[in-house]
Structure formats: C-alpha cells, structure tokens
Image (cartoon, rainbow, N blue to C red; front, side):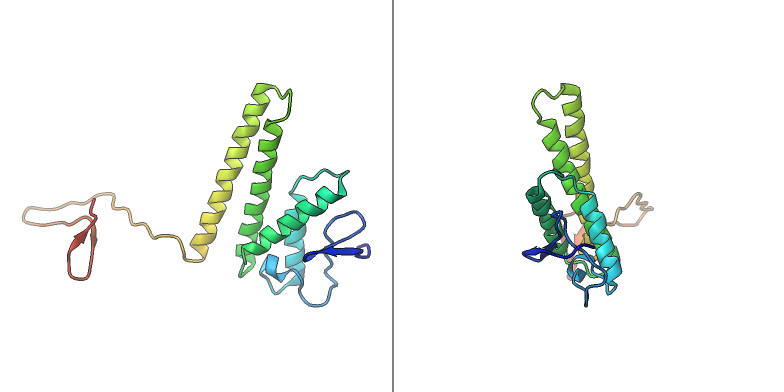
Length: 175
C-alpha cells in the first residue's frame, strides 16, 4: 500500500486518490464501517464496497468524493456485527448501482430501448436496496411481526374473533 498523503474527513487517501485501507494500521480504524473486531474483515468489506462503486477513473477528485461518501454511508448503518455490515455493504453498493443506471439512462442521444433498460435496472436495484434495509431491520428485531391466518374453521356453536384485541377484550381494528 502506498504511503497516505492526505486525509479528508475520516478517509485517508493515497496518491491515486483511492481510500487507503491498511490491515497493518494499529487498532481497528474501520470498525465503524465493518462492525467486526477483525480489522481484516472490516478493511476487506470496505474495499469490496468501494470496488462496487463506479467512478470516473480519470477524475481523482470524483473518485475521492464518491469513495468518501460511500465510506460515510457504510458507517451510517452502524453495523453491530459482520452480518449487519454485509447487509449494509450490499445496500450501499445497490444504491450506487441504481444511481449509475439512472445517470446512464439520461445520457444525450441514448437509444430509447437502452434508456428504458437502464431505468428498469435502476428501479430493480433501488428495490433491492429497500430489501436490504428490511433485512437489516428484521435482523435487528425492528421489523413488525406479521401473523397471517390462512384458514379459520369455526364449528357449530363456536365463535371466532379476527382482529387485534386489548387486554380487556375490546376489539380494535379487526379484519
């Protein structure tokens, strides 16, 4: 790894303008992004996420901005463990992929069928990102529990209540 020349925010950049990630750094500088005690896992996850983001390779300022923004986005998920970090990394990569598809769909003189395909791919990636957010919520126990009753059989003389009940037995918002 080349020597780090400058820092912008929390991102250390090397000569090529890419985020400098070194497994030899003391401590665990990327734990906020990877959620792991293993600095090797954290740096590998960050590298993989950054590699999934398309940049204008000849514009070092653009590379720096996009990689720094992606690192900040990854840290914003505040992953508590490796699984949460992998979900967050996929969500960040899908977001950037969707945005790139949308950008390409708007290029001048873009054939309409290619533009339509880019918009469709972007929408699919955006939905995939939402799925990753839902998966993260489920893992964290924040997702609402859903109980679906497929079939209710009430025999002669029986009674059934379908709906939400409070402790005192009042029905609230039944179906």
